[in-house]
Image (tube, rainbow, N blue to C red; front, side, top):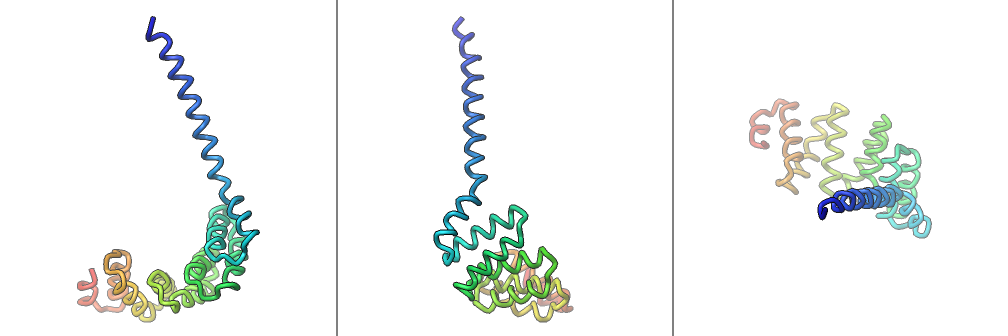
Length: 169
């Protein structure tokens, strides 16, 4: 008799928890609206611009994401993370020359992530020799990052520098 009330109680509790989980997911799914409201009140906050642009990009709205990034870059023209985001979106749209330009500008800010991404795009464009110095700088700064080391080794192989490639891995 005692166990008979536990099953309906457990089922009811499971249903309440399921509904609460769905409701919580809905709140997180509307983060774009929250970021857009914050952005409307402070359009010169580059971090907020980056968040809004990422949300727009994730929502398959790359044109709108680029507009937000351009506004952020108008306020902070050398902000490397906005430049990297811009490069990634442009590359995804097949606008390779513009992506290379944005990535170059990010690399020139002296951030290792900017250097790495610029090297990746240069390599994709068939410019392994131009990519290698940028990849080496990024790898030198962060020797713990395996992707950086692998890129240097890949470029060394492409350039026929097999002994250097063996040392890079």
